[in-house]
Amino acid sequence: MKQIFSTVTLIFCSAFLMFAQAPKYSNEFLNVGVGARALGMSNSYVTSVDDVTAGYWNPAGLLGIGNQHQVALMHSEYFAGIAKYDYGAYATRLDSASVLGISVIRFGVDNIPNTTQLIDANGHLNYDRITTFSAVDWAFIVSYAKTMKIPGLRVGANAKIIRRKIGDFAGAWGFGLDVGAQYDYKKWKFAAMARDITTTFNAWSFNLSDEMKETFIATGNEIPDNSVEITLPKLLLGSARKFDFNDKFSLLAELNLDATFDGKRNVLIKSKAVSMDPHLGLEASYMNMIFLRAGIGNYQTYTDALGKKVKTFQPNIGVGVKIKSVTIDYALTDIGDQSVALYSNVFSLKVDINKKAK
Image 1 (spheres, helix red, strand yellow):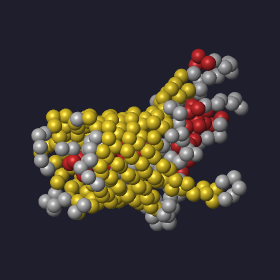
Image 2 (cartoon, one colour; image 1 turned 180 degrees about the vertical axis):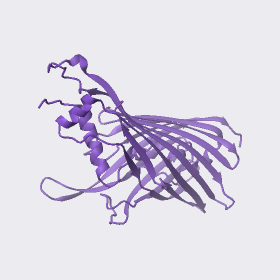
Image 3 (spheres, one colour; image 1 turned 120 degrees about the vertical axis):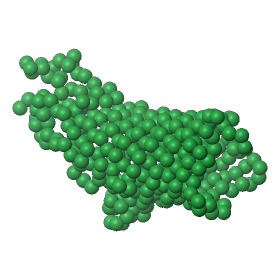
Image 4 (cartoon, helix red, strand yellow; image 1 turned 45 degrees about the horizontal axis):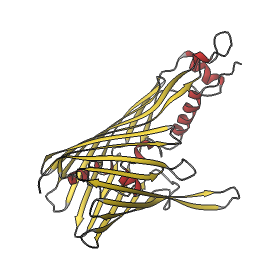
């Protein structure tokens, strides 16, 4: 039997294993996080978010923009630069009680070698037949936020379209809804964010050539069929408080709890019915211009080479500078624990436009 070694095959094999198990990790690129401020606080942000990035974290927070328009951009790279994550968002105030936002996320690996045509019809290696392709995940999010008649209560909702594509070989379209709320009570803030409340469906379709089907057969893999991948709902809860020490110094503390309902996960609080992942973020501010941030989260337990149970957690740090209408943030963070990927440098930019007079 002719042996054909293909990078494409390896990627598809990983995808099929995910389809075969419970849908715990569908659309995981939407759980990475956006904005270096939030990432520096270990994603503890659903309560205190009050800018354009709320379209991702909690749409209710869009009401905090305070300006007519606001835009944000972010770029980060993971796995030593192999995977690139890009984010852009825009928010505009419709009136004093409502805000509209649009967000775009791209997470992709580009220039992947396609070696399915490496061997020609005569059985010879021909490296000129190697082409490249990209494996890319896209998310397009439209957000709306409104102030309610109950004092201190803000609500919001997201409608999101998912596009996942692996070269010309496979692709999926998906659609989902999120809802969120924030509530201010005296000096405390509380929030809830329900993601994928209707269950997000990704409909996959495959377009494999005869040569690629031969590759699957030759390597002992099943030829994929069109299928549906689902993302189950997740509930994010948070509370936050800001401590003002004087006119110049303040400290913001936020605690979040991510609750999933798809079985036991490797998190701090877990059961067959629900798993909960707590994370804490801090932000020290000087004159609301210079910011220092830190956070901890991603508590996990693994078995080392000696069979001993080891508990780990992920620390993150960050800084930020705000000069008039421009804010630049930096975070040293990761998309998993230290054993999964190298820490990455993340920068994000936020600009206020047409600032209203107070």
